[in-house]
Length: 194
Image 1 (cartoon, rainbow, N blue to C red):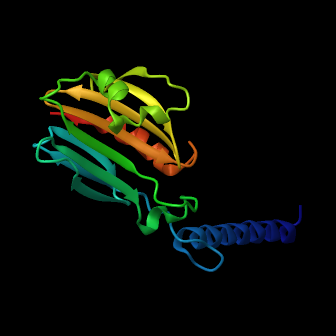
Image 2 (cartoon, rainbow, N blue to C red):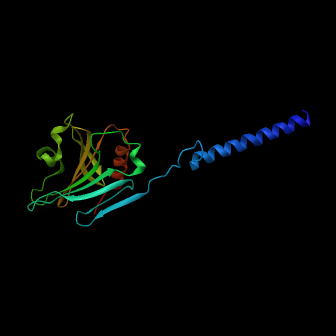
């Protein structure tokens, strides 16, 4: 091989390396022909000593709390909707917002089991279950029950009776490939009843 060919090979390798570096920089910095850098979500923590509940969720959800019960019976809803810029592209257009909802129901009057709550109250939406199946599950070391519901959106629910409360953790989604469904599954791993 002549010195000229060796020299040209080195120059070619250097040019390819420079072009590769420029391309990668463009991708990760949003430069010409690139896209914006990937921003990973951080986490927020919800904690309530009143309802003996704690969980972690991605910070691209907006959390709203509302008391929905009556003077005779407490009911409290914690609603998470993906409404920040981070997640707007991954949510398909819908007729309304899909959400993750944690509902807490007073249970020191009726002392229902989780399964009784599902089968006997309208709050559970169990009548909307497409298959009528209730499956035993463990959530934060406690016995609970999982089931599907269907309506405007597909939904999944887990109900746990613990102490003076019944907790119903639910998600609505378009399909199981939606980010909100994945986030719900991750949130369930962080739930603690205190």
